[in-house]
Figure 1 (cartoon, one colour):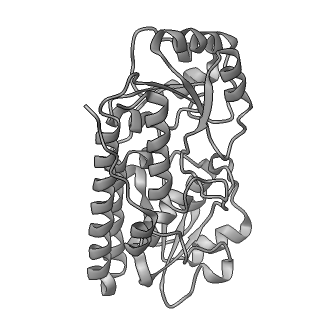
Figure 2 (figure 1 turned 120 degrees about the horizontal axis):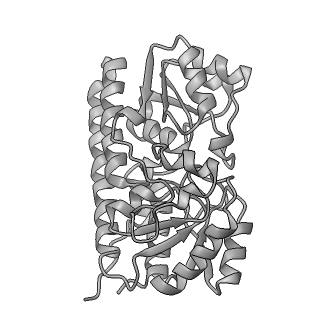
Length: 321
């Protein structure tokens, strides 16, 4: 059965107020003590939520610059000052240790940890467990630690991202009650769009030739689990970790067994390992964006546009019918 893709056009996304973070700034002068609800967000997915929910009432600052790999973020003295001056901090505990520490030390009144607003799971190096996957993480001590770490990449599952959005909306309403009605309205609009995106992924990935995809690092566990796919990552949760030779050989064998066509890489991390594996296994390469930041290399201007590009890439790689 042919499945039609129901994608949200960029113009419609813009009209619905889902454009880029126009109020987001890295300028410390704009980050606090304004006449708006000042929110410091840890990185793009949190800043996008704050911008969409806060609307005209929020002044949003991101601690992670566009193009910066968020896992490696170090907090400057200036950024600590931004946190102290803000009305609220929105972050995802477990993704950026430096942010977790800085937020914990600050006296900011409203601290919103997105990890507490949905359920985080242990995905190890893959989205689903299947025959032969057990023991991947036992090859190296570092990977073994990751096997038992909770996966923070919840924003790549539209359903979980919507759960977080609802929690953020309630936190904004409580922290800034004068504008509670608008925060509630904006949250409902955002959740509706995320539900639509979830429907696009469900329909678009329902019938595919294969369910297995290879990624540079294990960012897509929640997405894989949501839509019945299997993620196999070259590296683990940490995009900078190096795979063992045994892991690479295993992936080469699995590509043949499972009909894998493509090795996905991302825009903020080196694609060297992914392209080497693809060349050795005679596979294609393409971008699957973990949406940790928006740059001029991103396939879209905001969360929704990039997720739609991710859907198209998965449909091509998996052989959607």
